[in-house]
Amino acid sequence: MTFAFLLTSFIVCLAPGIGVVYTLSMTLGGGLRPGFLAVIGCTLATVVHLVAALAGLAAVLHTSALLFQAIKWAGVAYLLWMAWGTLRGRGTLKVEAAKPADALRIVRRGIMLNILNPKLPLFFLAFLPQFIDPGRAATPQLVTLGMAFCAMTAAVFALYALLAGTMRARVLASERAMAWMRRAFAASFAALGLKLAFERA
Image 1 (spheres, rainbow, N blue to C red):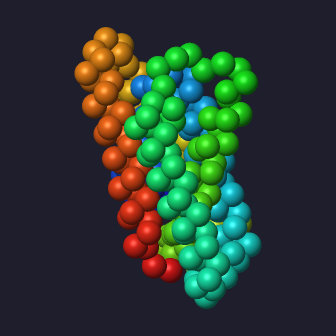
Image 2: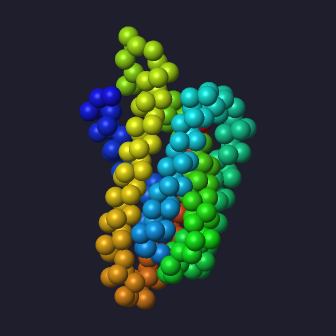
């Protein structure tokens, strides 16, 4: 595993996307515990996409326009639903402590938000082979690189959660800040939904 791969993975994970927005909104809304639960959900979805890519689903998605479109529009609908719920204060950005019973729901939402992005397995299929040593067996290298990417995803998202946790007290002290935060996250989910709607296989 090269430094170039780790650096590239870090930059890719650092770029704001669905998982980052969800992690930030959960942390600001409920604190570090919900934020870390969101990290778990998003990371598990990344692992699922990795397995799908290694199993050849990425190739199927690339050749099956119907399957790609079905997954894509399910993801768009889910993101828009999250945007509406957040705007109305019933979605991710709710200022309250997460109850034990909510843990599974938070993780499940993180999985759903990321699993409905059909570009992720295609990303793995295009990204990982660039760092394979042609003189060694490919499959073990792909698994190692993929798991390293998933670990990087968890670490970067956890960092986002920690940073959001340090800002949380200041944000909660202002009702106006909370209102604008809700609008910002709702707009982010809606924008990500629209971006996904225009994605092509």
